[in-house]
Image (cartoon, rainbow, N blue to C red; front, side, top):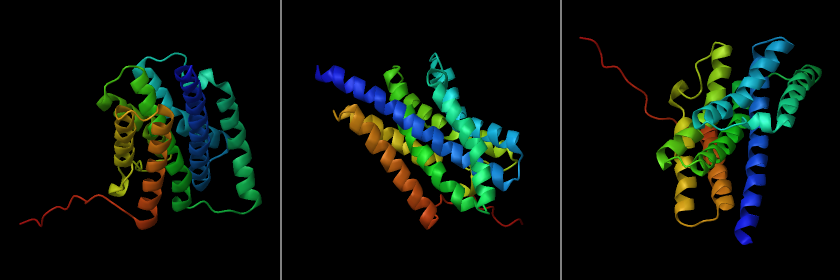
Length: 218
């Protein structure tokens, strides 16, 4: 009975986490599109692909059907409605989206999708390494599409920022907690929280990986 209850709770948790992650990435996509002065269609397209691109690729690679957003159609409506209303609010309040402002909702989406994506892959029988990589794909691929659409260098490789590496380590944390016998619900929540917190600290304190330095030419 306890196991069944835990599985039911976990199922609801994963849906909630992915739903919040979708909204967070939608906001990130809207802010990027607004900064680039895209029209309404452009905003919707960028926000849609940012929010749903990573999870879709994960489901394709894991051969999961239906896709996560097909099984939860309300998320599609939420993305579209938010993409239409978001630019109107930005214009009405004369807000100016900045690169730093875009990173905060993206950090939230990164943590939620990395943790839930890793756990979903583990439930599908993937190895720890493959599951962790699926979490990274879930959390970063939508942002890669977003940045490529607006002709920017994707954040996942831009400026040696701690981005994908945080998602990768967070995925291992989810697996490690499960391996230690921690309930799945707790493992996913702790993993997501850890990724979000570390990413926000990396933004606040500008933590970066060492850059490649070319030696002086002779």
